[in-house]
Image 1 (cartoon, rainbow, N blue to C red):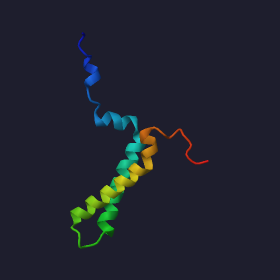
Image 2: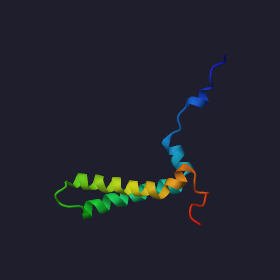
Image 3: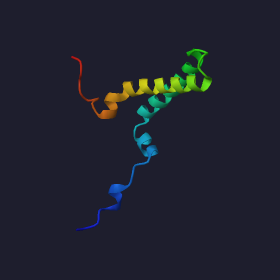
Image 4: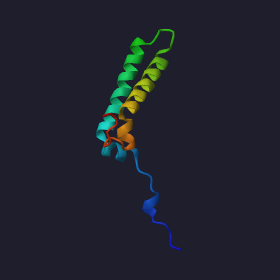
Length: 82
């Protein structure tokens, strides 16, 4: 039996994936930053500033993932409605 090729088991760096999908990366980063800003300004004062920023960032990232889900899993070529 031959040894497996070294290239098969090398992980892909996150930056290489981001360079291959610049629109999805931009949407994710933009929504996360926007969510953090909106969370810091609109969430209640009974939360600490760090929790408001983190909560808004998580909410923004969740919205971005919902927006780009079809593109991420490769279903963007299929018509869902009509």
